[in-house]
Length: 161
Ligand SMILES: [Zn+2]
Image (cartoon, rainbow, N blue to C red; front, side, top):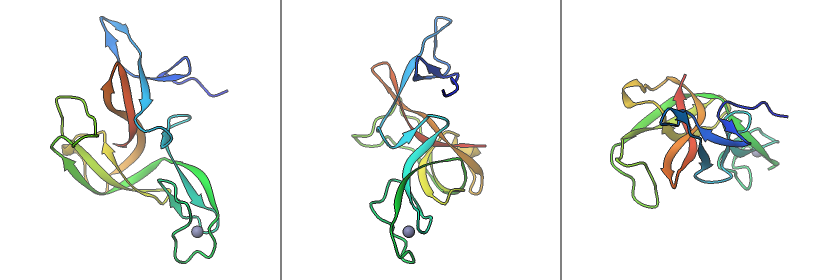
């Protein structure tokens, strides 16, 4: 049986630090898009990998796109861990619908990350702009994207380590 994490209550993940009136009030964490990432045993994104050449894909690829790969043997794979910021941009205006965000809108950094596992991924940074630098090491995390109807909707993000 998996070890119970501090932010896991009755098998569901809850937001940490949700305190109202001095008592802990768990806020249920729900994936904003189901099936793309997981918090079980640490933050991962759910992609796949070609077993013939080792090329990783996220999101999942139907077949291997490596031009030097003669065969395409795809297998599901969960990717997590660390990487390095290759580039980044700042979202300093509210995204258009159907994107959702907590109001008032707060600008955030979008990082392009070269992961140690071979993926180049795009994701929101947890850290503020003044701390973000090209070349800095980050790790994949699952964090709140927005709140709605008393729930915290989550996505994968990157956090400086
Ligand atoms: Zn391949």
